[in-house]
Length: 436
Image (tube, rainbow, N blue to C red; front, side):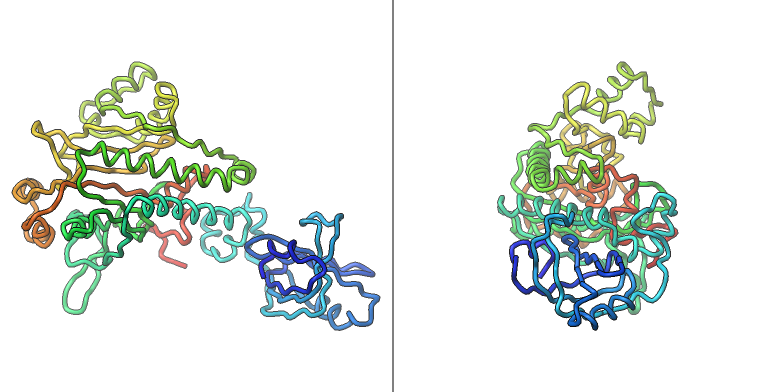
């Protein structure tokens, strides 16, 4: 039984297990606070009672952060701050013992270096804040999944070991694969599209992706969790933007209903459920307004993509101009994007970036599905045999389609106002970290 369930079992015997959070060994009574992932409960032992002699001895030799299994009666205790209940134990079993001093106090990390916390992540993750963070992240993914399931999507699982670089770029991890080389997947992009060429219609995947980027920033990692979506029979990339906006609005509303008060209390962040539709602007218009409103100027070359500072200012622009936290930016130069992104008859990219709270959280697009066009686009990028297996997907008919990907760790970072995704990944992987 979990601790949050015991309030429904007054005057009944229950068994709970958890970590020893606190021990107060007084002259006449012992108090032990036990915690699990759902909360805390006080265990009360009267020393004067002969029947408790063995229990008293156990607590006398117990250490904080050990784990115990407690059987006892749930009692009404209005003065106890932890839910107004306590357990009077009949049996305590020490299931594991903390045998040393913790490397740091995870309940007060104000003076603890982040690298130290990551070195001892199994201790760092014991904090209420971190446990809550992953509960929120889990539910965020759950509700995005739920939206897709409700709209006819199938969840797939694609390989992470590939015979060719998934984006055919340089930022890939090469691994030895028996007598030849293989590569860790940068994304499931090619296989999402293969699923649509196979007639699956609407697919998604939540899985790790790998990028050999030597980036030491607060929002990059060499391994991260990506929420990838792809679907067929679209009219244009506006359909892709609309579906992503609807999915995020649905998930944010559900997370807000469940966690809004806790998020504000613990993280000092507020979930603002976005209104539909999300605003969108052409890239050139974004830079024009950034200059007019905030005197932000860039070189002509930099105007071909969003700079980090431009992304940051897009948050202010979206709020000032549209009263929105979100902004779709469209009309990027085709040469800045992957060869499989569709272009219109004028060569304009049929794709977008989604900016939220000053950070790009998505690149999405309509894909090129016509065999001759995608072969030519690959040749323009200097790609050949490496992507032949992918180009073959389109030889025998493939419906118009598009999709997007969202980094789960980055989304969590922004949602909860956390400084770095090093903290929102269960175990961070970066250029200088491959353990624990």
